[in-house]
Image 1 (cartoon, rainbow, N blue to C red):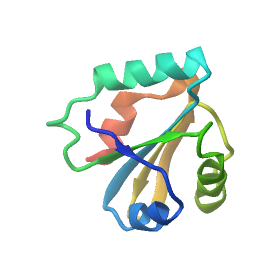
Image 2 (image 1 turned 180 degrees about the vertical axis):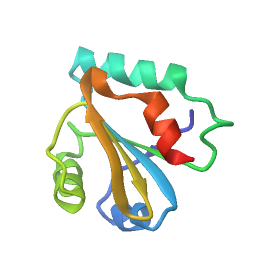
Image 3 (image 1 turned 45 degrees about the vertical axis):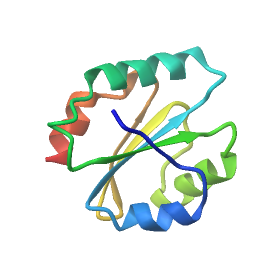
Length: 109
């Protein structure tokens, strides 16, 4: 899985223009977040998900971006949290152990 680091607010405008994008908001201080990230990475299949650009947000370091994501996509901030976007609209979001790779995969096709 090749993560694209999400490190500035300007990237959000570019992400909204993508046909499909996944944003994973990760807390580097949380063991649940580490487990959810590991689980997603182990399940991820690059061939099945080649149409999805995957963005990784260190929300401890970039909390302002995390807050902006909540505002733009009308989702409550969670950590960890995965959002699947389709043409600028959030079509899936979940957090903690409810992050479901299979559902993300199904919605991205």
